[in-house]
Length: 562
Image 1 (cartoon, rainbow, N blue to C red):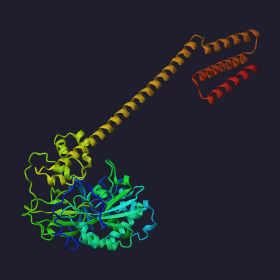
Image 2: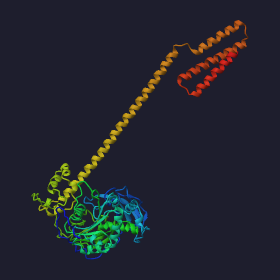
Image 3: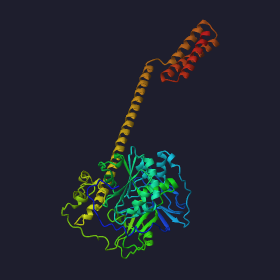
C-alpha cells in the first residue's frame, strides 16, 4: 500500500545509505570499561542500585526507574562497579552526568532471565511494569520511556515507524531485514497493550528489502504496511502521523489526543526481547559510517561502550576526520569527547572526512529568501525564530511556537547564508527551559515563604490567646484574693470562737479535759472548712473536694457529740 497524504515542506538530501546497509549486523567487541549514564531517556534519572566494588552480571539491574517517567538501567556485561560519579556524556554542551562505570571481567556472565511466554494472559498494567523494569525507552532518537508512552486510554491506531529518513543511518533498515520475526512479535505485544484496532507500519520506499521482509513476517496479520515517499523528515512523529492518516497533531497536543500511539521498529523489537526472553535493554544496533571509517556497517553495541572503542574497531582514521557526530548529519551533534558512551538513543556514529560534509562555512547575513519557511515540516517561520533567538526574545519565541520545532535541520540545510539555525533554536529552547525552571523554583520559594508567614501569624495569634487567657485567670484570682482580704481571718476566727467556748465552759464548771477536747475539735473543724473553701476556689479535682468535705462533716459530728 502506498501513502495518500503528505506534509508541508521537507527536503531531499543525499542519502549515503549504501555505504553501511550492504552487510549484516555484526557484534561489536566488548570494551574493558562500560560507562552507563543513569539518564539515557527523557524524564527522571534512574537511581543507582549498586555500590562501588560490587560484582554484577550481564542484565542485572544497576539503577532502578525513579517514577513513572523514568527507565531502569542494567549492566551490559559482567564485571565490577569501579565508580559511580559524574562523567562527560553524549550531549552537545559536553555536560557531565552521573554514570555507573563497570570494569568488565571478560566472562560476560548473564543474570538469570525470566521469559513470559504467556504474556497474552497478563493485564496491561503488568506488561507495562515489565517494560518499564526492563529499561525500554524509545530507540528512534527521543528516548521517551516506552511504558509511560503506552499507558494511554482510547488508542485506536498503532503506528510503527520504520521510515529512518535521515541520511547515513541504516540501523532500522538492517533490523527489519534480519529480525522481522522479532519485530512482528513486538508489534503483536504492542497491539495487545494499546488495544489498537488498526496497525499501520510505515517504511520509506528506499528500503524495498526491509519492506518485503516485514510484509512476509506479517502476512498473517491484519496490519497495513505502507510505503512512504523518500523525503526528509518523514520519520518525524507528527509528520508520519500526517502522512499515514491525514491528521495533524494539535499544537501543544500529543498523538494520544487523536487516539494514536507511535513506536519505532527497534523499540518494538526490544519490547519483544524483554517480554518473550526476559532480556532487558543492554544493547542496540548502531550504524558506524563516514569516510573516516574503514569497516562501515551496523553493529550490535553494548550500552556504555565508549565511542572511541567502537571507532577503533571500525578502523577510524583520526587524521582524515573533521569531527565525530552522534546521530545523522542533520539532527545529530558533534561529540565533545570520544570517551562518551553509546546510550539507548545512539542510532549512528558518523565520522566524516574533512571534505565529505560541508565544512563550517562562515555564516553570512540573512537575505530573507524564505527558503527555510518553504521546507519547514512544522510550518513555522524559521527566519523570525532566528531573529528572536538572537535577541533572546523569549516571549516572541513562544508566540511563534518555537516548541513545535523538531530540530530536523531542514532550514539550515537550504539556507544560502549558512546560518546555524538549529543551534540558535536549541540554545533558545535551553534558555527558555532554564527560565521556566527558575520561575518554578521562585514560585515554590514564594509559596513556602507565604506559608511560613501564615504559620508565624498563627503561632503569634495562639500565643496571644494563651497570654490573654492567663491574664484573665490571674485577674480573676486577684479579685478573689481581694475579696478574701476584706474578711476576718478564718483561722483566727476559729481560735477566738474556741477561746470563747472555753471561757463559757469554765464558767459553767465543766472539766478542763472536756474543754481542751472541744477546743481542739473546734480548731480542726475551722481549719478543715478553710481548706475546703480554698480547694473550691482554686478548682481542685473532684476527689480532693470530696475528701475535704467528708473531713469537715466528720469533725462536725464529733463536735456535736461532745
